[in-house]
Length: 68
Image (cartoon, rainbow, N blue to C red; front, side, top):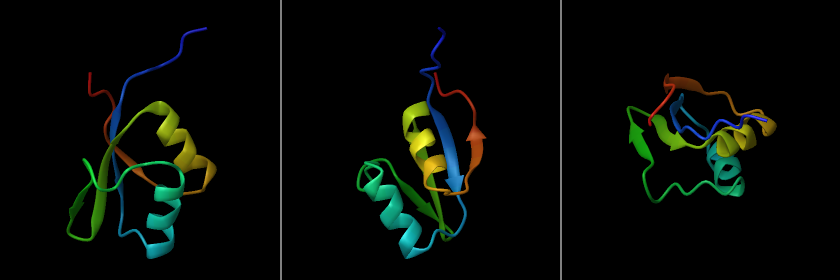
């Protein structure tokens, strides 16, 4: 089984307070490495962290598919 371990840079467009809380509840640290730009949230996440966002129905766009 080939598990992808590459990180991606993603964008959450204009996240609500509820979405930010869900990101935090998913175990993603917003205090370190998160970039807030023009009302948007940019994160560099592992595949596992991205899966946690998807499980919480948080929409995002991939800015950079492979940060390795």
